[in-house]
Image 1: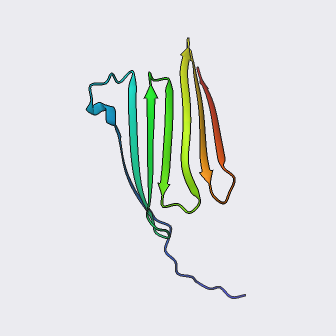
Image 2: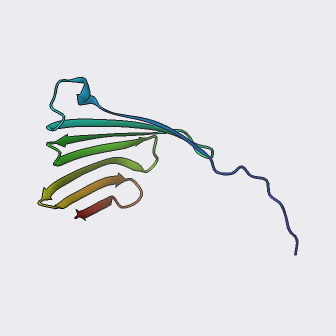
Image 3: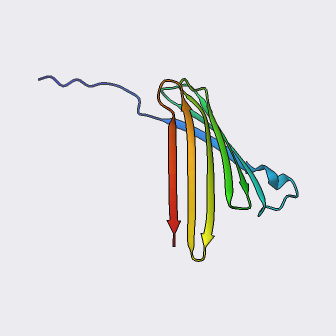
Length: 117
């Protein structure tokens, strides 16, 4: 039995991002409309740079419409989603659904349900 030592660099990823509610720049009522936009830049040591771009429109703090995209990506396409949240007395209810298109794999559907007391 022989022990061999390998030299390798540990995993490392640099990530920076910004997010903003673009409707803060207008005189829209923040309880009626929100348009959140986020951009993350990612640079892993062992892969090329990628941009993660996403947006979420929220209507009356109840209905959210979402979209996102990763560039460049060999297999992953656009992501779309919808969310609903509502309070019923002291119980909060949240439902989220997201769809992501993939080229070589089956498309991905995500579903989330949350109750808070």
